[in-house]
Amino acid sequence: MARLDRIIGLARSLAIYHGIPLRQRRLRRLYRQFVKPGSLVFDIGAHAGNRTRALASLGCRVVAVEPQPDFARLLRALFRRVGRVEIVEAAACEQDGRVSLAISERTPTVTTVDAGWREARSGETGFAGIHWNRTIEIDAITVDSLIERYGMPVFVKLDVEGSELRVLAGLTKAVPVLSFEYLPTALDDVARCLVRLESLGAYAFNFSIGESYRLASKQWMTGPELRESLVNATRTTWRAGDVYAQLHG
Image (cartoon, rainbow, N blue to C red; front, top):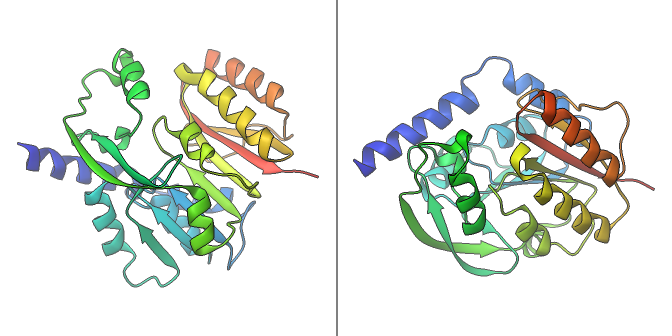
């Protein structure tokens, strides 16, 4: 049964992230605002590689960081002939070392290293029926260590299922642009991430709702303005999305 669950999970992720028409075009349109050919990018929580694919197609050098062994193997297969893509099989975290990864084999998009986030989500309607049925020990690496190894990225994308603040704790340098996922039920986590980012540099913020791959505001915002905008947005559209942070000044 576990093997079947893993196959179903892989197939589901491939269909969702690579099978929807025009998704790659929308991603490229969004990312062109932040990168150019030759830009170094970290795709942290690369999963099935749809964002790595979009960034590589724009000519970026991509370091794709993925903790799940099955998906790391998938990424190596997908990008084996793309010289500008490097796969790092590890979880980005607050310190280098080892960490426990809780895997949901049927729904691998919610695999996480953060036990508190997993516990909080288990009581929510949107996560009903999801089971984290396997735990493994994996390598952990900080963003600072990635920077030391590969250089300063132009853009860092985070999709780490509740570990955003832990990842940011392992970053002590202001990167030009960074994005991270938000959930309507976890806006307090967003506020903590904004505080951390503002301690690193003079950031302005924007956000993208759901899978629109379009910035929701024409104007970049302060931290308090973003938090207010997210509260208002989630009142009308109960959907997850991504926060974007860009250095200004």
